[in-house]
Image (cartoon, rainbow, N blue to C red):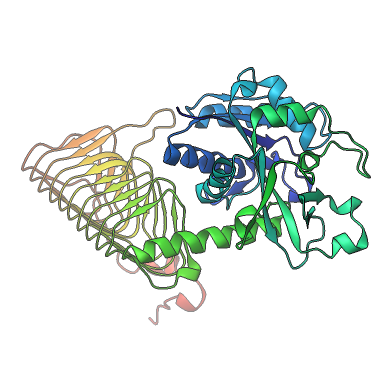
Length: 471
């Protein structure tokens, strides 16, 4: 029979030390919010063990923002019990049970914080095995800390263990190095019975969930050798430290899978990015979101790539910026190119330095080598576009489309006044401004007539550039 697991995610904190206007659970970290990491750890744990997991985020400070974010992001059913006042972790769990009509019907209850982004399904699995194998009423994850100031201390004895909060600990107890992580699993019926007996007779005047762990009870402290999964985020310094730990973990996984990171210390790859083996990534690159990098891709230094798909053997040259784009195999991008949302490049295209592409489809073999803007366009196969090309797609009120047929040649310094259609195998001469359709195989030229006035330059040249008439 599948166990029913209730998950209480403590997400009511304000996080004033973060210095941000957003509520603490929504503090951004490496493409996600802090609370996402806790939720994903629980979802992964439930999937691995085929458990029936249901979650409730205990909200408080700026609860509307937290609820809105979670409802938009997760399809899984989630409840949002409210902790009206922050009176401690036991009070938060009471709010969880009173605000979730299903919570007391579960077999086990997991309690975790919304600000532990390094937590994974592995730590939950370790606790789960202990509480199940030993048929305990509760387990708490612990670790050792060189400077344990602020942490609850773990005091072990012949009858088990107990947790003493830092403010309430004696000098001797404060010298203990084993500390409480804030991650627990309880038998639901047992913790439900204990909650009403937890008081606030302590120096903070709060209801501590740690009081559920007492000597002689059927509980156990599970000591973890690695403390990093349990580190909470309370200020920007800890946020940065978490980012680097996440980055290192992600990069090592890619390297183990055959991705060549020339300098992993300066390479930032979010956890949602997928990279095939054989790809090479140079320093100072940032890969975000749903980006997919295929095998034998080369990404040179200084590139930022968001929510984009790169086909096999694509080369992205230095300092290019790609966002929500699709690039087929053997294309070359950059250096200093920008591909904006909706750019779709087919096989073998070349987009060179200082070229910007937006909401445009480039068919196979298109070449746009330098200093051009292509927006709201459809460019046919093997079209060559010269330097300084512009699609004039916006009339001040609406965007309009430019279409260029296959095998056409567009000369340098040409402007297309959209909407306009250029046929197949057409030739547009350099310096032209095109505002009428050009038929297949036609030649189009639109320039002002060149005029020369002898000896008139001196009127316009000043100072040292002036040409004196010696007559």
